[in-house]
Length: 109
Image (cartoon, rainbow, N blue to C red; front, side, top):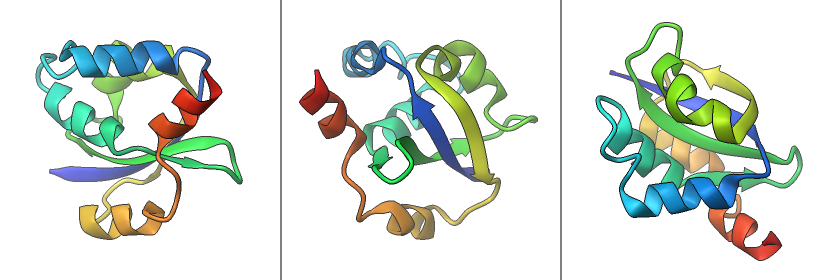
């Protein structure tokens, strides 16, 4: 199982994505819903670049193919897998000092 270090520019519909995450709609998507819900729930915001950053479990080739088609491309632009196989703990530690994505979104709404 690969863990991807992801950066993406948030679109203007993140409040809608948060509602879908909270409702359990995305979690119910197979096979990636649980991992995506967990990863996006912990996503961070990089104020220097204006990007959302997170670590996501992924089995697709190309990386995040299903996730992009079903969810990510609707809410993010310029989605980049920075590192295709990152240690999950180390990856989250690298971005732990950044503010939470959802606090940023809610503050701007």
